[in-house]
Length: 191
Image (tube, rainbow, N blue to C red; front, side, top):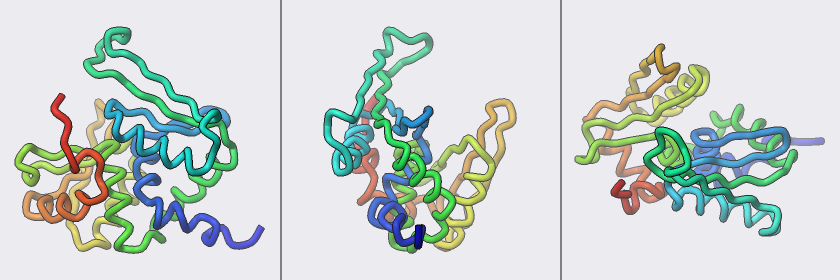
């Protein structure tokens, strides 16, 4: 039994990018845990995390071609593993993300950004991260405030989506601080 926080410290700090990515693009089904994304580089990064913990034959990979899906413009990738212990670990840690140290919060937000974030082409005037639940958005808003940002939270009722926006004056600093950890910002995709 013992100290849950001690056992989960890797996901809260060393692997905080993975935690952010998993919360943004993750899914679970029964005992499976994984992510979906249209950017193969993001999928590859999560797959490498799984390969550190499981034999390669346990990790499942799926590609859904855009031509086979209605309304899809891009291919969709899934990577997952069947593991109830890992699923439990992610569920526990997602509730403890307020314990991530400030330096590793930028890794966490890089993962969130790679999953559900976007920035304008000038890399500063429109920086946002989308959320599926108000609880998640409020928790991350508090984390951004801890880093001295002043995020705005909007609710789009028709889309059932919540979006955190950073002001242009703060977006440039935020992007600069998450860029070393972000897969999307290191070499942006041209879709």
